Image 1 (tube, one colour):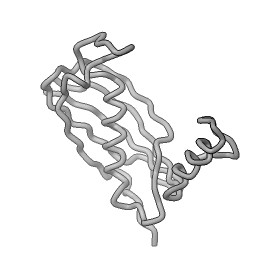
Image 2 (tube, rainbow, N blue to C red; image 1 turned 90 degrees about the vertical axis):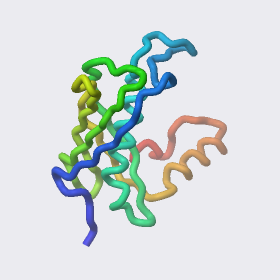
Image 3 (cartoon, one colour; image 1 turned 45 degrees about the vertical axis):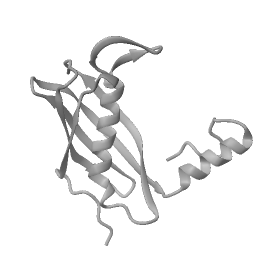
Image 4 (cartoon, rainbow, N blue to C red; image 1 turned 120 degrees about the horizontal axis):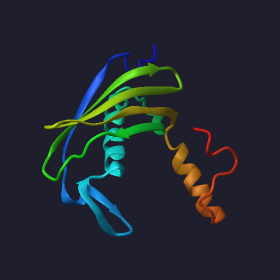
Length: 144
């Protein structure tokens, strides 16, 4: 029988904030604190760690939805822990709630949902888009 993460199963992912992870827009630093864009990346990594061991050789997953509230700053040098806990598990997707903590407390929290796809499907869609000379989606490529 197919296995998926169990409800309540969780992983903890740790990162240290570096200078490159500060809030930067238009090629310049706008705030010397941990950027929301980096938080999204680290949440996606934690979510991937939650499901990756369950993926079969022909399976993959892709981010489908993320809701994130950036509640407090984190600073260069801070060690962050990102905890992702499975809250929705179906044959089509895995949803998790997450929290990001620094030594000072909660930095962010929210929900991240990944959808299961056939391995190679997104690479094939990208090749088709390049062959068309577009980066857009057609032929249902966006339905993952």
